[in-house]
Amino acid sequence: MAASIGRLLWAVDKPRWSANRQVCQGLETLLSPVKLCASATIITVRTKKRHYIPPRKQDSSVDQEKAARAAGLVIRQQYMERAINISCTAGIFDPYIPPEGDARMSSLTKAGFKQRAEQIKQSATSQLAVRKVKEYDEEFNTKGFASKAQDMYIEAHNCLVNFDKVTLHKLVTERCYPDMVRGNRYKTIRWKFLQSLEAPRLVHVRCPDMVSKGNLYGQVTIRFHTQQTLAIYDRFGRLMYGNEDLPKDVLEYVVFERHLINPYGLWRMHGKIVPAWAPPKDPIIKTIMIPGPKLEPWEEIEVKNTEIPKPESVQWNK
Picture 1 (cartoon, helix red, strand yellow):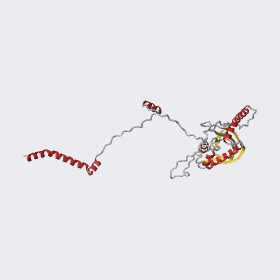
Picture 2: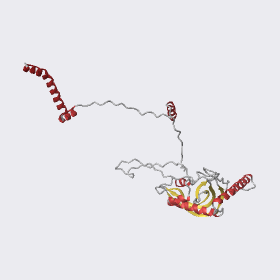
Picture 3: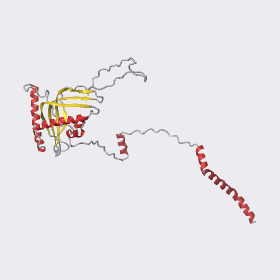
Picture 4: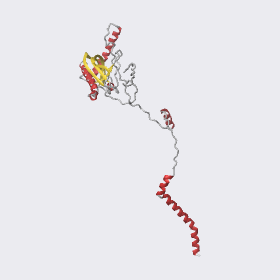
């Protein structure tokens, strides 16, 4: 009786045991490395189709501010800050206005009388500025400073010709340096000081302040009437401006500046004043490429009888 019951229970559990065995065999075959490699090479996987998403259009500052206010946020105000240099000023305060004709008009005429009255007014203001400059610079002298300024002017231009940047920074201010070196790259400059036609003369003195009331600067305008030679060559060695063998008379009004409250400050060249009645400068001769005939690799320009077109006359300005 017990044996028959055991056979019956084994018969009932047999299908379940066989099913589990088949499942285990299927898992073994599925997890085998050989089967995995084969399935990876045979089964193709289809990826998701990707659509192009255009970039988001940037909102303007007004739209961003409205969206931030709606969300209860506060946008910090942006300040346009610019670095400043306190060792020199950013320009020429109360620039000297040279009289037309360099004050050679007669005082009997109406225009000459106006020039004379303007000179007296400017000289009175300059005398007050000279006294203030002497409070910080005891060695300042209106007669001796003009000759020192001329030596500084000649040395600065010689440093510009020789590309001596270290010495040039000591002779010119940070405002004048970019104006002197701009456009001189790949160029050759030949400059020579010949003589002074007239002694240098101090014509204008101002003592402005910047940022605060006690931050004083001294600006002195010197009149130079000299004879110089200048020639500028481009990177190909062709003459662009001037002539080395042709001396010219030059009348200039140069401004020198010093930071007065700085005990280690120096007088340096700050800029030039160009009067409205000054004659225009000569045009600069620029090197241009003349297009030639189109040749094949096996042809030469002598074989092909073609004329090179002449360029049209163009007025070049600096």
